Amino acid sequence: MDKVMLFAEYGAYHQERRNRACHAVGIPLIVLGVMGVAHLRTIGPIDLAIAIAAATLIYYAAIDLRGAAVSLVIFAALYALATHLTWQESLGAFVLGWIFQLVGHRFEGTKPKFLENLVYLAIGPLYIFEELFDALTRAKRFS
Image (cartoon, rainbow, N blue to C red):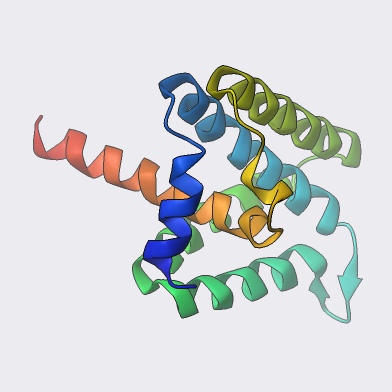
């Protein structure tokens, strides 16, 4: 599937304003938590968080270069923060992020899209990061 199809499918499950707000908070927390825990494991000289981020960004680049660039910046910021967290704090961020996700879907009245197709676990951050970037750039244009 291409970006348009993936985003249309994902977006259909994320129409409600409160759900989108919960995802805007929850998804970065989940990514932060994963990076924090993955940072503690290495593959040779590279920690697992970098390897996961690189693989994810390669996938994003295959779908959408702009989205991959936006995600690279956000991943870098989250990684910088994650390297200062304990595994307990990382786990807490991960769990809190999922709580936001589930509350959001309760508002929406839908199940998370990844329950139908696991690819949406990767699409969620790309979708939300692009939405956040678009909201920030729109706000700058009107200020």
